[in-house]
Amino acid sequence: MSNVSAYRASILHCLRDPGDDNEPLASAAVEYFEDGLLLVVDGYIEGVGPASELINTLPTDVQIVDYKGQLIIPGLIDCHVHYPQVDIIASYGERLLDWLEKYAYPAERKFVDANYAKEVAEFFVEELLRNGTTTACVFATVHPQSVEAIFEAASKVGMRLISGKVLMDRNCPEDLRDDPQTAYKQSRQLIEKWQGHGRLSYAVTPRFALTSSEKQLRGAGRLLQEYPDVYLHTHLAENEEEVEQVGRQFPWSRSYLDVYENFELLRERSIFAHCIHLNDDDRKQMAEQGAAIAFCPSSNLFLGSGLFELHAARQCNVRLGVGSDVGGGTSLSMLRTLGDGYKVLQLRGEKLTPFGGFYLATLGAAKALYLDDKIGSFAKGKEADFIVLDPARIDLLQRGGGTNDICSRLFAMFFLGDDRIVREAYLMGQARRPTRRAKIA
Ligand SMILES: [Zn+2]
Image (cartoon, rainbow, N blue to C red; front, top):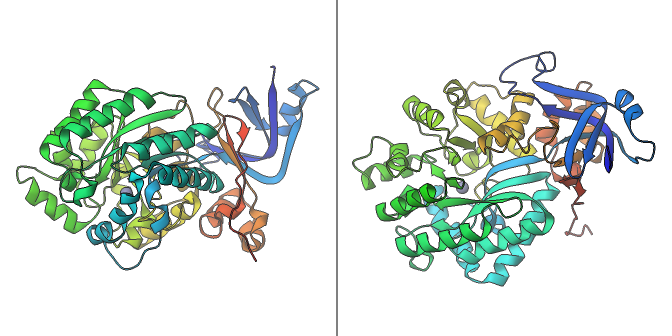
């Protein structure tokens, strides 16, 4: 073992889906070491286990980074977020379709300016790290320069990230429209340049069915056939009014999902945000085709879109992750997002268990994104993306939220924790210390 780095802390990660299991530690779906050691070699996980056992196996010159009293977990994964919308987070008063017109489109218009895109992209990547998010599936805007900006910003810090140019050629402002030919051509150029470049992957990104012509959706399907490794990232069945309009716009369709399926956009590595107003036929179809759902509870509450049916999605075995959906969502913190997920499910009479939520933002999300061979847990050989949480940084967590076992401490972090408890974020074993810009007077 040469070039070893060792990190000592409490360490938690999932080995498989804990589901609704009440004893996931006992059944070994989740592994926890109160005094653990994480070993990293050349940016990859070498091993994890009790410190008392592993310390003796290390070469004598290995420096141990001591995070005792703190918690190391795999880097959190945000399966659906819009980086151009960071500055319209928490904008008042609208539901989806009006919210797009009033806030999202004016914000996205500014990304015609490459310098502006660069500034926002760098801020966004830094903000992800501050929140402990080490991988994200990200909407850009219709402008190719917005995609260049986010890939460059992620590349600079070595972050694993998925993004793509938004495709929209109808039902949106004139100056944010492309057309099927330019959409296809620009996407192709971006794929050729960025797909598989370092840790970056491309997603063909029609905004949603309403904003693309059939010709454009067909072009998106063609891109996926030509580049089978790229992702498809879009929205599906978020809001009732949207679902009705899709029915009118595509009168031949069996359902909203059927529109995407018809254009061959339903497949492995297809990521659909929201999926609130679906039925079991849709869910089964998604599971069969290997597509994934990004559950976005904070956004669904904020825009009043509806309550996601987690149990039904689980029953149908659809791949599942969580998304902040900022700017519809109100926090980039995946901890807070899980807290909102819990509240949504309470309203439905369902449960999101602490470890079940943790899985959705780590290994489950990695599986949803077909990246579970690379990230999401501390299995040997995975990329060493991890974060260090220090609950003592928040008084309330330190007091009540510290009640004994790891399960209840984790749960309290969903509600009381946020970027303040993220002490470090490591990407491929490199510390990317989150900086704080805002000055507190
Ligand atoms: Zn969205």
